[in-house]
Image (cartoon, rainbow, N blue to C red; front, side, top):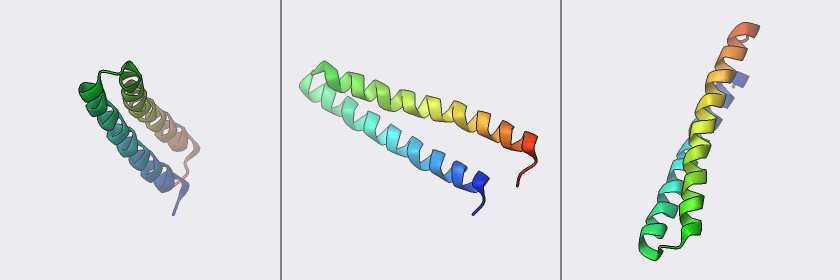
Length: 68
């Protein structure tokens, strides 16, 4: 497995975990109205956004290096 393939797979799996974690925390916040769950939910969704920008940066960087 190449470095590029590994990073793409890792980013997809990490994003799915972040979305799932954010959803679970949001669902818990709706039930309990404890604000810490809203903070955790925001962190999960921000993680996905950060991983999206990291993926764009990585793909650009790897294209500049001409690595397959």
